[in-house]
Length: 592
Image 1 (cartoon, rainbow, N blue to C red):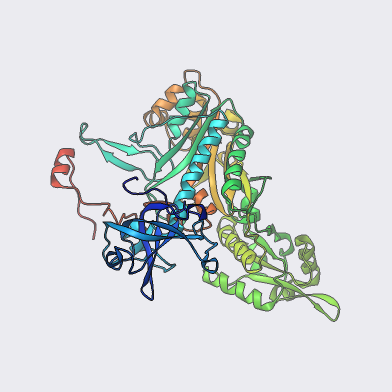
Image 2: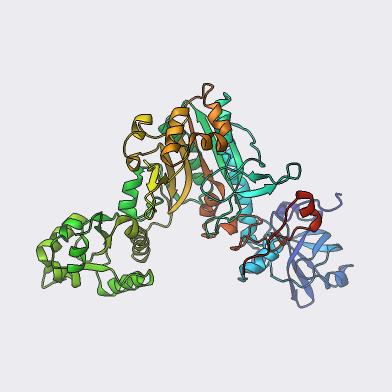
């Protein structure tokens, strides 16, 4: 017999009754039923109930074991009495009578329990992550993650892609976040960087004549953490293709991701229709470029109904250039109680409140109610109702200002309304491509033009588009949103040296700076570079959605905490004086 096990803790069934078996695993819990000891023995695969009574030659040893001891037992498989069968587990028809025991690893008093559903502070869970990872939910999440990555790889190979690895130590490159710098021992005073993404390398792979590339790529960004973003590193399904249009990229990645969500979504509906929404429309309708389309609410511009109206706040606001009034329909929200709750929400967001109208039935007639309705009169109120397609029992909320300042709060309000009124379909994955991103933005204080999004995107219209107003230039750039999260970002790349120089010139980068910062890419474009494009899908975020959690650390095996610290490995740590001398570095004390 094998030194540690003849079966896993998920293998044994009624067919094994009478067999002598060997199992190894962890003591999940111990129960003493009148002198008979029952142990739930757990391994990665499942749980088997083992038991021991005073007739067992190792009863005294079994009495000593405690939770999370790692043990090996030999025993005989017995059938459970019919009334004691546990249909919830595969081994529920049997139990194993213990005849021999070996303690493989005893456990001290535990800082967190593996058995049960107790909640522990995240600091405790991360400090003792190896214990936290033993828990059933974490085992399930990590298995899900591994299976999702394996499925992605297979689907990409089936589509004719090959996986190539790109460097982990490279040069610093502006990808939209801070680099992690790595000092060079051989070149004192110089630094490598960990790649924020394989962006330039995958474009160079296309310039090297490889038609289809993909990689399960680690990316490193020194970012401020959020619940849906790791502060240090993350993994993405990275892909690039030559001789493709934007639609070709969409048609390639959709069946891969749709298939993954159908395979691992636990029966939740996976939308097959992925609409393409312009960046401008997404901001106008949803207040964000990552809309949650499970929520059917679509915001609208109602400015015309308030111009010159009796509601002075909005009427005066609209006299300023670039302002508008955004309406958020709220089907079934037509009660003063709900309107008051939304007003309280607005005040928590730092606003004085939100204007609202709700429609009710009075003496058999539909009536508009609320302060706004009284101020603007029945004709304007009725026009608003018709524009928004609302009726008795519905409401609408209004926010005014410049779109950039209004949209964030309006988008949050839309989400809250959808949640509170039960309009958001929780049992569904809803996708949308966000397209036509602006390439440039103007700094509100300095008036300087800079890149708003990916600087490597091909401008729509090419060189001709760059000769006009920069703020009107759209890129062949796209994101994929799902349930309020950005899952994919990509672009058709700018592969023409003259167009690349002009694009960077507009953002204030001279030719020498472009050559210095992107020298390999710029040079490669002079030697017959093909049109190419691709995208990257965030694996951590995809698994987070599939696991039905809102905290990305629940699907990363060894994550950092919110302060970018590894409490288990004590990172970041102080370098030794010897290390600093070897690298010719000096550490300044932190500022007071």
